Image (cartoon, rainbow, N blue to C red):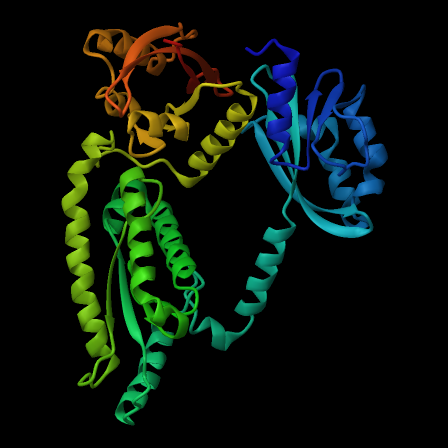
Length: 445
């Protein structure tokens, strides 16, 4: 438990940095503290404090809430409704419109019951960009013609649109267009069936969406089509055509990073360009497809690399939502740490993030690791392996206290350094250990 008020405030403000403001409320007395990093509430002193959150929230609601959502939010801020909403799952979320500087801003109100069941954290998140993106998507979907050519899951063009585009290109080829400079990139998600079968279609859908986002972020000037469950086609042209080799290399580098860290989809790819003698776009696609399968086989052959990174293929990858949470907590921890190497481990997936300085100093391939203890063993001095293993086992068992340890580790230059590690455990709302982390300090020689 954190008892130092300065450390508590730093962590709270780091947490508040992800929201417009955060209220820490005693649900029994109504006493509250406000944490915020900006002038969102036009209050110059933070943290602010009050004696009756529920009364103040209702009294001041008309100042910062749109008239059309006043009744809704007054019910949300009612103490009895708060207790009722949090009684089942321990969290509650509702969207509303706020008035900020005379402008309407879409906000998300989040309630989280603390472990002691006596305090509630209320967070206000600005979701204006998310709202505008959804509104824009709705406008697109209103067009029946557009919907017929748009993949519902990813938002890119679908197989119907590809057939039409293919016919258009085939007409150009038949006409003898000598200036036709196009190519095809064929992409296929590795192990999508395995993901669907073992983790469910929600995980599979996330992999498909993440793949679409990756393709679109790399090939920004070319149409992208989802032509099958796990298959995408990019018809490269213009700027992308001129820089096609560099773009394909960048795309494959992203896929390789995802393969190593298992924090994103592993996508095989192959590229071919229109050549003299091609009678249809399908001829180019066929060559790209063949090269894609070669790349797919190469990616699959590297699966044994998982063992060296602590990533056995039988494990379940950490969901994006848990990875985002880990990153947010790591950032907060990094903010309040005074020095040394920082690490944080999600115990449900045995997935951890480490300071980049640590991975650089000790020659570790990635700052993200599954089963980091197995990865780090190659650096630990043989005489200190037992000490290190005992500390890891204690942490993974969810011991209430992590004792500091000293051990020797080999840097990538071959020299050993003595490391002093202090750790902590974070429990979930039910008191079950959920995260462990800490700081690793190299001792002066």
